[in-house]
Image (tube, rainbow, N blue to C red; front, side, top):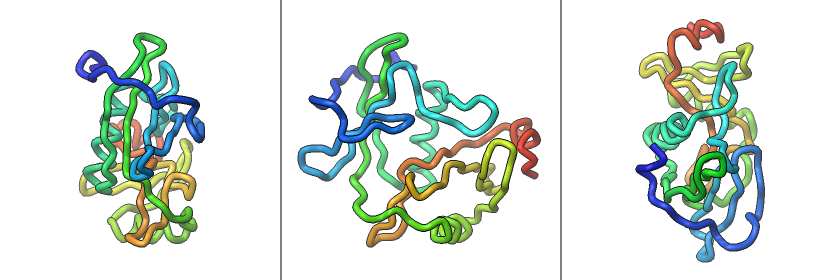
Amino acid sequence: MAAELRQTTLPSGFGQTRGSEHEVWLSEDRLRVIKATHAGEFGRKYGPERFASLEEYLERIRLLNEVFSIGWQVEGCCGENRALRIITSQPAYFGKPPALAEIRNFMLDRGFVFHRTRFGDAWFRKEDGMLVSDAEPKNAALTVNGIMPFDFLIARPTSELLTQAGIR
């Protein structure tokens, strides 16, 4: 999978912020946010295995775009093996973090049902098997166009994982 990604470079200097999954820069024109995974890591995922594979991370980006239309693009990669980093960009969403009640209404309006599980809080939509976790204020922006969930964890989990989580 990494062989299919084009080689690219990181922005110069240190990122303006560093989270648990990414180092982040604001583009010079301030229109996009550039994100680089930490070396050898590909973000988090829902379930007992908390770290995503490269394939799961790329699927998360695809699903966030499909379900929430956030405009997250894969720019390429840099490094190799244990130093591999995936470079992505997404529109810069200016606004404030939404309240948990606003996120709740946002998810309910899209047909998701809330579940408290052994792996943490999650939202599941049975009709298409979509599961969203980490739907927290820090991972979304309340903009003039509504909530933009720029870093929710999203996947189509296996029936085994849903059973383990107690989601039916």
